[in-house]
Length: 144
Image 1 (cartoon, rainbow, N blue to C red):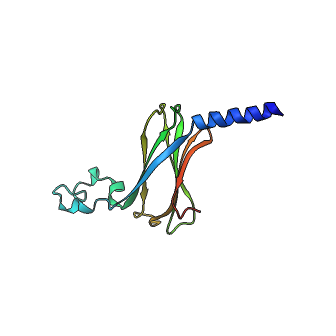
Image 2: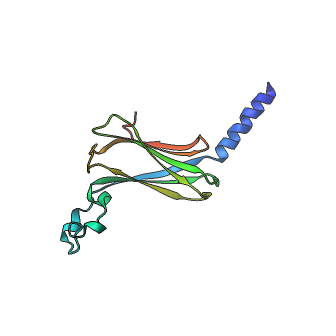
Image 3: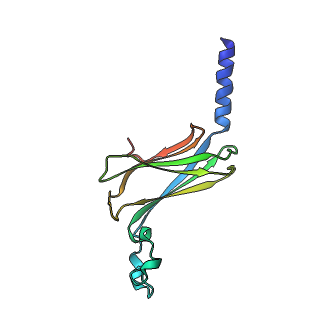
């Protein structure tokens, strides 16, 4: 039984060494190409060069995070969110294909208009995960 307790203690020490923390989450509402009408090179005049993603409004969430110690390649930053007109949780992720040692940021853009408008983001949760193990989490006050 003592061996089991030592094993659990060793696991908790190892778990704390590979922890991370989410430093902050920045949220910006991007109106899309609202100011493009003033340009002489309007997207409507050059449809071949227009980007459909910039014409609709979107919300940008930037997650700043850092590991307590270096984490290997394969670390994920996940972003789950709910929108006004949808009861379904949406999921986005960013996988780091390189080892992370120091502050990083992950940017997630959510369409709030366009062809299928679901409205503004009402609740969200950001996580840092490695091999299925949760390293850090931050959530909005409205997350269920």
